[in-house]
Image (tube, rainbow, N blue to C red; front, top):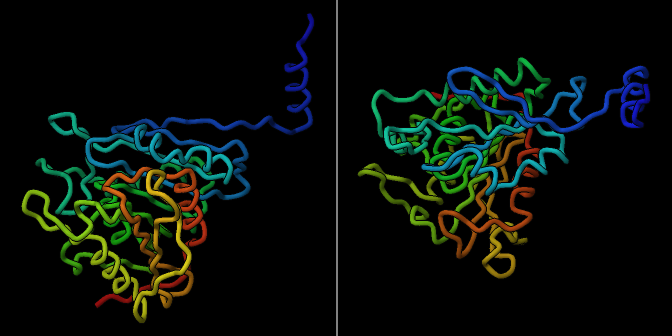
Length: 294
């Protein structure tokens, strides 16, 4: 029986102890199943970073991935990647129960906090996840969820990115157990940029959310602008995004604010947007420190 060249090469690789590698998407079952992207160069001997991306209200994980296009970056940078779905309400609208302000308007309430942490646990049980490089990105309602997770699980999550999402109106509800890095990204023409309301509940807005996180993370001194600008919106000419950051935060952490001038609640992402966001996350792994809360 003749064997094709590809089959012969596969046999030789197996006999030599080398396995042909390729990226895969593997499914996790359960009450709320999800898929995990595993990069082709994944090696269980080398713990990998894990990124979870949370979509906005009335969206889903697949649409958010199409918007972010993070999979090619996960492949290039050897990142385990999940973009799960929120719960569909009685009208079929998917949401996350982030904070009391947004966006679980049903009863009983969905425990999305536990669900996201279960994703981390399940992936970590099956794959080699670097516990110091667990990250979450969220847009709008997903951003509310990101802020919730940063408040509740800073001992496990190293850094988060909030794109146009609010946080707890009462800052006393946010008491992280450790320092955490936070990147806030808002368009200057976002209807929530200066604060707003959802069903009568206030949204703090961009600057207040940013300054609150500076205080929560125990950063010292005022925030400062960075001279270099970024090009994050494809439809706004030139480098339109200004960077502001707290320079004296607990060792290894950062609180940054990227203001996209002229962008709306849903920015038109430039080709380098997602790569810049991922670079921020990877630059801020978990540090062995703690915050003492009253």
